[in-house]
Image 1 (cartoon, rainbow, N blue to C red):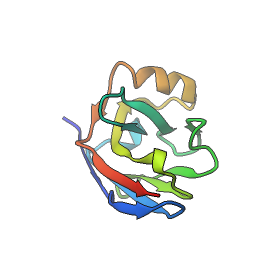
Image 2: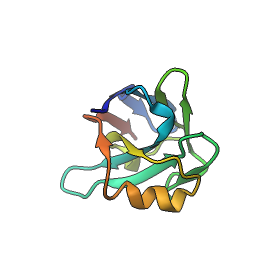
Image 3: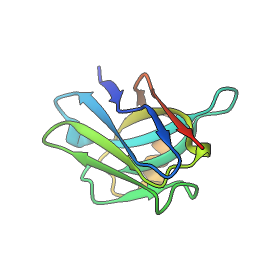
Length: 129
């Protein structure tokens, strides 16, 4: 069983920065692609960013491109989401996700994230304008 624990969410002013962390309990972290999603109450969970198991390839939602950076430390079993130039519309609960895949194709990995995925409990990010 893979367990994910997010941390780092808090209240921040518009224009500010925040870094989220996702600690993953598994002996085979390097076999998992990692992703971040977010959800606003009353709306569907939406994709934010994905990183392949090696860390070599990433992909982002258009709304966060150029502002957010996903990364991972395979030695520490941790994934990160660096968020810069935050906007009020970034306010949401942010969820970390893991899917068992060593593919370097982010399109294929995103498809897997719709079917076979482990989720964290979420961390609240609130951006005040």
